[in-house]
Length: 255
Image (cartoon, rainbow, N blue to C red; front, top):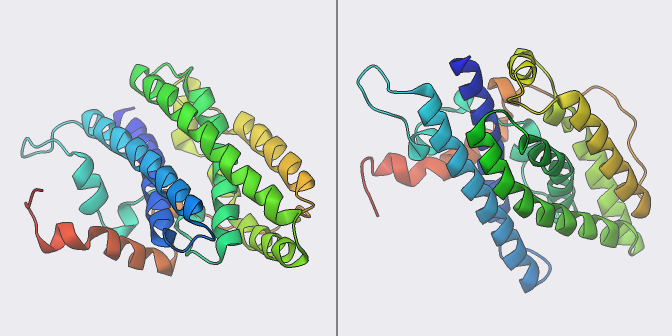
């Protein structure tokens, strides 16, 4: 149970951290200054979530053989690529603004129902974190959803870009709500949110938003998965290198 819970917590922490890193890469590249600030705030919220999740993962795993307890810095800076368990969607390289917003929206449409469900977790630590995260994520979804509608139902050019973004991102969405042995064990004990229920809520949010945005919902086809078990895209290694370069260049440093 302990190993299963640790893997589950790390999946959520990695999801938040990797998406935050991608968002920070586009700060100063948004179409307006206010949006630069908004993307920064989204990233900071996600980093805060990842820090709390990583700290809890260290508690769950317990001391290593040498007596040390892994902390948030260990999980962010000292794991290799195959040890990260985030869904592929959040690690995809940034494209144009429509792609950045489309990725954010498809993620947020999952994240809000997820944290809402986790407020009822039988794990008190996860339930407490969910109570804080649900407030942040509600804003994230409002923000990304408004941009999807604004671009999709905007000019001919903005509509085309938003449609192209959703078409390209769609095959990565199934992994957000994938169910495997990790979820099965934790759902049975009330620790984890039920992916089957989350899938319905995600689809309801996405369908309503894309309909309002006049965006055609892509047909379901072959889906790309593997990130949650450590199989990542080629581009992820570059993201990780940038994220970890300072810590690895100056091990043991503090600031």
